[in-house]
Length: 188
Image (tube, rainbow, N blue to C red; front, side):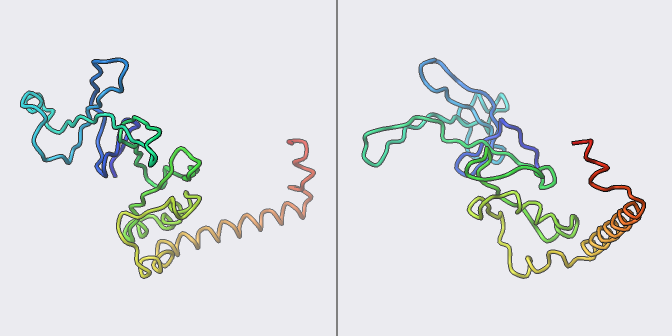
């Protein structure tokens, strides 16, 4: 998975990194220069190509008008994007009222075999199903495989052993009058 900084943008489905900006008129929105690693078209200028900037594309401001043509808004047609692993996203919430509105999941059954439960970790970040999309189709067979792998079963057995040990320890302590609510009341 590639690391994406806060300076990474998505433009018409392509991902790029902010390379610079041009602002000859301070009263106007600057023109962004965005480097698109997958761009294969001609360079903007021959000079840019000779400077190693053949994948730099200017992104100019766009003015959009409402349906009634009574109001307008000018802005840059980009969206800030963030890429991260599901592990690093624990504790993050994705939703319409959150800084990150959508989660585009790159989940695979291979990833699930390597990291049991990772689908749940990723999918549980979103508040609504509308905030979740998958890069590739997920079949019912793929979903049925979640939690059925040998690693998943080993992990589940370990968790159950730890829970049982903790429960036994708690019962032993309670039998000796330790670990009661009163023992911890002074900490509150």
